[in-house]
Image (tube, rainbow, N blue to C red):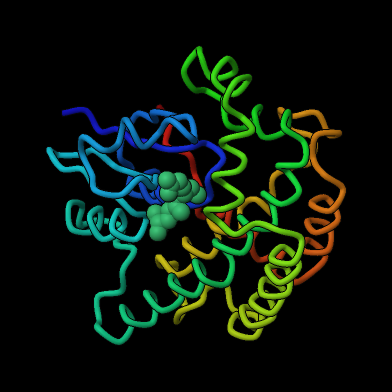
Length: 248
Ligand SMILES: N[C@@H](CCC(=O)N[C@@H](CS)C(=O)NCC(=O)O)C(=O)O
């Protein structure tokens, strides 16, 4: 069985799984699914509809946290989970913190602004996916947009609250890091990987493969503010030191 990561390229939870796979040196293929059609493909293997889902060694593993657990069990080198139980508990606590205080609110904030410009979302949703992606969204985008807004509770009010929640989390992380490189005692762990991956949309350059005009002004301003913080430097350094793409 070939190792395959079923994913959305836009998803920061999928970036968490990609980073873990690359860090472990696993050779894998990415299978990009179209948000809105993805659940049909996944339901033959897993119970829920969320990505990432990893197919490896005869198993289908859903959820980025479960994927890191699985990789640490399968591959003994470059452990991402601390060996001692106290360290493990702390790492998992930071991983949950990253999801609750960054991953989920960041998605609300970004979608609130991105969904106002269908082209910017469709470009991201169809990147590296099936040939019929654009055709699908030319018909189904309004419905998919409603599902996203309802599913994640996206509104101006929730976007404002999400930004406040993230800014409080950035402060909390800066307090924890102080001048250290890592969240836990001097070593890179899944705590750093999780926080780093879920903050990765803050680093995406405004003018990469997408036209700069397609990044809403609110997101550009949020990224600029973030990058001027100590945490912005920490994230850039973390990516430089620990996020080598697996040469494939
Ligand atoms: N707890 C999950 C969260 C993953 C998640 O929220 N994935 C989103 C994309 S960012 C998704 O698949 N949404 C579509 C769905 O749930 O059907 C994890 O860590 O993998």
